[in-house]
Image (cartoon, rainbow, N blue to C red; front, side):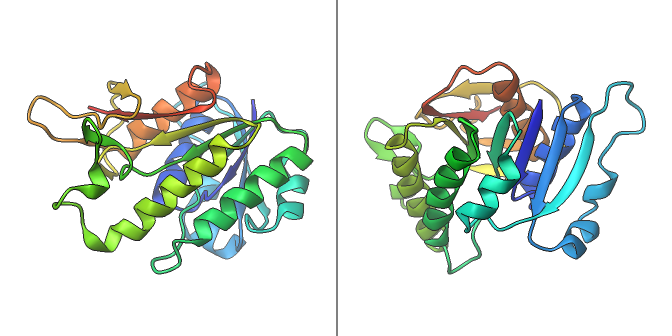
Length: 222
């Protein structure tokens, strides 16, 4: 596929780009600054030890400008957003979500997959992770922004999907072994909720290649 990826310089975005290229897809990574992209190692993502590798292209653009998005998504099969706002500017996520929806539609692409948040997932019937006493107070604004962004997607007519991570996500090994869920936090036998960014990216690309959760949120974990 031809995939345009926003937020490619972040920890999750970089792994999504790497996974997509490894699978043979053509990825256009949208960055605000090519210099930062070079620092993050994006130009070197094509694996040397694989016979099947796609291509990675860098394009400068702004996720907050619908016209920029429309230009970048033209001719693409899928848009992926791994965009994350800066600390203290969480409401920018809502602006980016509206801009994405408008720009993707203008550019003629109907399929969009976005990285979501874990805070809105339930840990018990009617109890969200973000409402528990253990949830970090400093993360609540971002969790609320992700839930509002989800509502914006739900009101759109795009073929959208939001993939929420588990409670903890960090770089590690790619195992390809994980479990999927809907609105309930995925936990293991020790009640831990975690995944590596590499396996999260694998789950997202599985959905990109074989769409199942269209028009809904789903989650992943070990």
